[in-house]
Amino acid sequence: MSRNPLIREVPPTSWYFRHPRYLRYMSREITSIFIGAYCVLLVFGLAALAGGPEPYAAFIAALQSPLSIAFHVAVFIAALYHATTWFNATQVAMKIQIGEDFLPGSTITGAHYVIWAVLSLVILGFAGVF
Amino acid sequence: MKERLVQLEVFRYNPDTDRQPSYQRYEVSCLEEWVVLDALNKVKETLDPTLNYRWSCHMAVCGSCGMMINGEPRLACHTFLRDYPGVIRIEPLVHFPVERDLITAPDDFMAKLKRVKPYIIRKQKQPLEAGEYKQTPRELLRYRQYAMCINCTLCYAACPEYGLTKHFIGPAAIALAHRYNQDSRDQGRDERQEVIATKEGVWECTFVGACSEVCPVHVDPASALQQVKIASSFDWIKEHLLPGGGK
Amino acid sequence: MAKSNKPVVWFPFAAGGTVIAFFIPVIALLTLLAALGKLPSGLTYDALHGLLAGSVLAKLVVFGVLALSLWSSAHRLRCTCFDFGLRIDTLVATVLYIAAIVASLAAAMLLFRL
Image 1 (cartoon, chains in turn red, orange, cyan):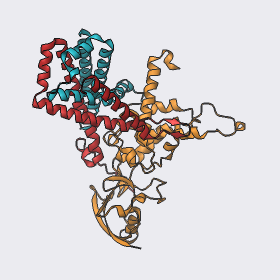
Image 2: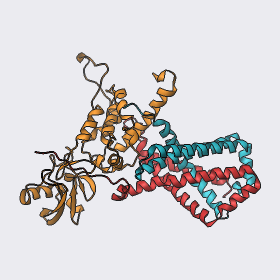
Image 3: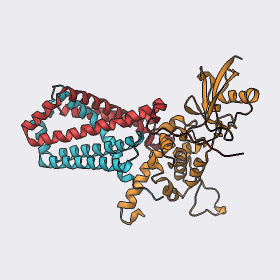
Image 4: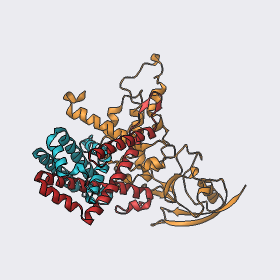
């Protein structure tokens, strides 16, 4: 009996096409590009703010280009996808044992959504959206 | 009882004669309620005795019959023909070398399982007169889920990071290490941390979560790994930032 | 192999991921409104400058959100590059982490000056 094992290589650049769950994973990971770029944009916004009313007004005006709008929509969608996947992941990572039972995962995730909603509404309120 | 003509497309590889694998089509008449393993057994019994595959308990307890069924890591005894209306493609579990046909070489997993010391380690052994190590239901719950692992290695086939970096210790081994770390009778956590809190241990994981999705016994190794990451991070803070290394 | 120092990188990543999840969607919505020409009243120069210049707490919160979000995105992007088949991890990690640190320092200096 011989041992001549067959090695099947994993294609390093296209493995994620093998199953929808890998595509979902890569989509989640790619949100980091948009969110990272957006944070850099926010730093530029801070620089404009520190520069005074005119640089800040110029920054706001630059935000209104079609490319910027498209970018913002992409960032918003990416941020939402990150948030929902992150909150669903916390119930996997946080196992809270109370006596002889675990807190249901939906409770942990639900609590995150509630905090998120409240925080977002408070911030929107302070920003004068309503 | 209703019968159905099932078409199987099965991965074949003979190490003595083949350089490349091939696929062989079989058509067998199966009962409606059968599983893929039953279809394979019928092929072997009536059509082709040279077909090789592992199986044993036929009830998702032994972990022997793991295979890729239509591209998904599954137990052949736990996969119902009625859920697969078309041709069923059967391949050996990916990310492992193939010995022959559907049989993989799980040596890498076995070695890693050994490395994480999946057994109770005591620094001080209780004398026999003291009786058994007692454990409350509360203490049992801390690790029970992770003790369900049947070592079927479906999670290794699902994990893309294991597919890309073979030195990754992997979901099942780390989940089993966590099972013992969480066991109140165990005193060997430090020893296991030396193995799993390393670059090729838990830190290779990027929380894809595929391992938990394919686990046939709901061990949820992904949750074990994230808990190990959190615990290891607190360990690091204790060892590096607290005076005296937190000892 | 010795125990890894990965927690140094991972812990802030986990904190940053949580911060991003809670804060970035609503902040992105605010700037999206600004981009659409409906600048919220809280984002005018006077309101925003007044808020930040007058409150150390506000500066710390903004810095915390930005720094952690930048770090978390950098780490995730590093792992993503590996998953896409790039096998130059040390270079990618160095570039991304330095970029995150530089952007965070810039934010800190700008906030300090406000």
